[in-house]
Image (cartoon, rainbow, N blue to C red; front, side, top):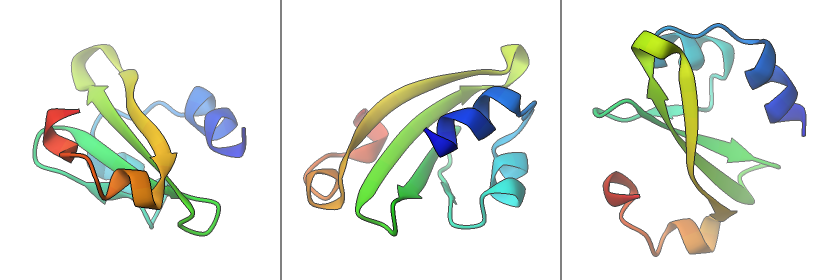
Length: 74
């Protein structure tokens, strides 16, 4: 919920702006961003539609589940 509250208030226009706010976020080439949640216990993968400033959640799960997916395909 803490991440969600921050994301709702944010006005990110680029993935790099996300990185500035969440230093532990990993910005991928295709506009996707990976967040470490709860001390890296969980992973959250989002895709940011920059022109519309819309954020799509592509995956949320444990770090172990994250290791089993192809991040770019989610």
